[in-house]
Image (tube, rainbow, N blue to C red; front, side):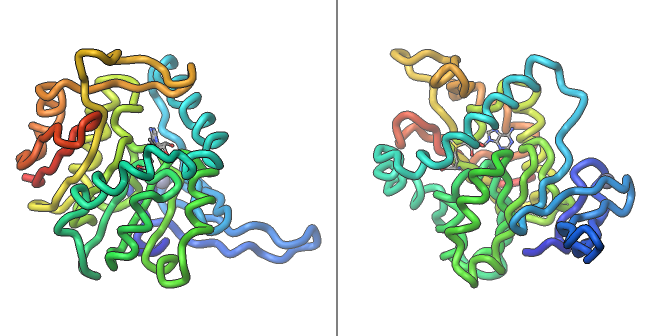
Length: 263
Ligand SMILES: C[S@@+](CC[C@H](N)C(=O)[O-])C[C@H]1O[C@@H](n2cnc3c(N)ncnc32)[C@H](O)[C@@H]1O
Ligand SMILES: [Zn+2]
């Protein structure tokens, strides 16, 4: 996976790499230029910062902006969450089972600081890892070993616009992202986007908060991070237009584990 596989999230046109040129003022940073809309995306630390989505309802846009700012600030602490590290022992083998080999092309949505991405790289997959928090992506970039850096392309983009061509991925993986997408309409767009980038027969594996009677179904963690806990039927309804759901289980406790096959 490399920059040459990336597409403009707005019109899916190829992106052209522009090296930073030497000038009297010093060396300019490299950029990516969309060959159709001519949008110029900066590359920071090798991570393309692609155009944000537009045309959203102002309330939803503001909630997503707050989530992203919180994730940037929280990226230093995220890996130190002991509970999540322990939970990984149960969640990751289930999420990633059956996924191995260099022919595997994974779009990972909401990769954060790389709890899942590093495992994917170790399994030999080629990975496009997308998140809207640049600080989290920078932390992840620093953790990738040299072979990992060749196999994994990190990109800052929204989950509703995964910057690759239709059918590029053999697998889509997403751990605990969907619950932070603030409206039903946007959640539908995220799932439709996952379906778009998957080839027919491709596999989806995701985890997402599960509604439990003693927990609030919706709210904000730390007053900033929107969350929604899904009822089984609600999650099944979101996936139904695109996927044959093969697993929808609550065995991981506070999250659903979902596996599906792209129709
Ligand atoms: C709970 S963290 C999970 C991170 C990682 N998948 C893991 O399991 O450790 C949720 C991640 O989703 C990202 N995220 C939330 N909403 C997003 C959106 N609309 N577009 C892209 N990333 C988003 C956040 O920045 C954060 O890194
Ligand atoms: Zn474009």
